[in-house]
Length: 139
Ligand code: TYC
Image 1 (cartoon, rainbow, N blue to C red):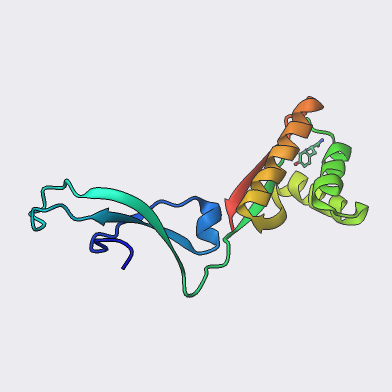
Image 2: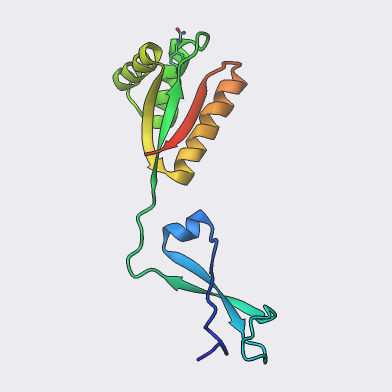
């Protein structure tokens, strides 16, 4: 065995991007010479990674658009076409749904893509001085 002691493998936090492909981090420690009296002074000597036998598929997030009283309808349609690749008819339908119901789904994506879209929409709205709000929610 490469490591002197693999008897204290504590799961550690791993970034979402690594977790998504099934990587789990474990703390690898070398036991000290106290016969494991639990003095807690074992040395951490590295981080090993394991890959899940059954990788989890990345969790999905809805990108939601919220209604407000000031953003022009044409601007919302432009946003839906530009960032969510909708045609005019689809974008108009989603915009009207949000206008009438208060909230609507622009699309469902893996976390990092959903987050990027929210940031793009919010930046574009701010640049154009519209109060349009966009957020994400676990699907
Ligand atoms: N309610 C806005 C208006 O009457 C239009 C609008 C639709 C704004 C959807 C935001 O997400 C939105 N001009």
